[in-house]
Length: 139
Figure 1: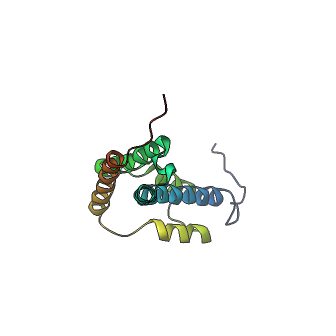
Figure 2: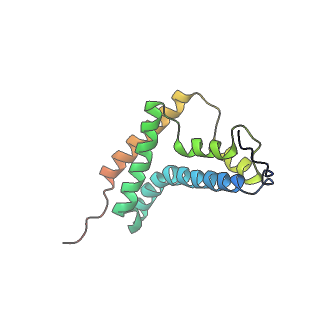
Figure 3: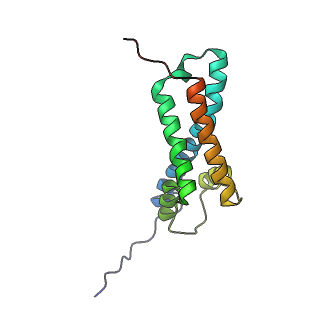
């Protein structure tokens, strides 16, 4: 005999909706870090900001865009997108936060365009790592 869960689904804005919105905001912040990190390094190098030469910041930034570019080249969906879709149970209307962050994060364009942009951004990040190297620790 199959067990049936008769509990009502949580109202909008609760349960999986909140988790999916939190994941979407984290995804947006990750994208902002990847996109904004490179111009911040360029600007910071010109302005003499010390934090843009922080080794951990630079390694994490390169790793993030490198992973995104690799996913694009391999045709693998971003895990954050997959997890969000799973939390939302497939195609469901998004919450207020979800609609706005989704609007800012996703664009309707050919997949190859995104892959080319990811790879170009990763290469620019790698070149910047060489042109504006992180600080070395004092001996």
